[in-house]
Image (tube, rainbow, N blue to C red):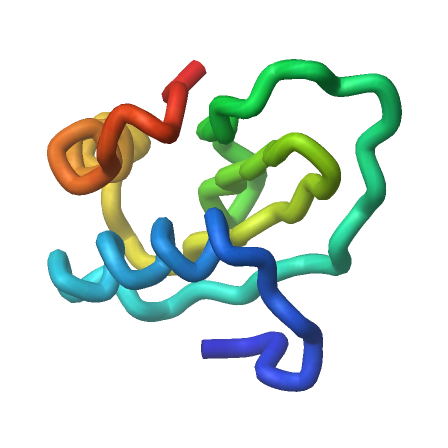
Length: 93
């Protein structure tokens, strides 16, 4: 896993744990960005595809963080794994 010196938010830790159970381990995470004026308490997860990686953006009530997945899996597999592994405190967009 890359980005070991960067701190990680709790929602991103949970997502990485769910992905690790399915042997999706080649991941890195970005910086933590503050979110202003968000009143929704449910953590949002958005999955997009970039060239060379899959980008998972987690947005909580106060912070946002990006996780990049470099494993050779399809976005549908990542979406299915997250839908099965995450509880109702997460919303997948």
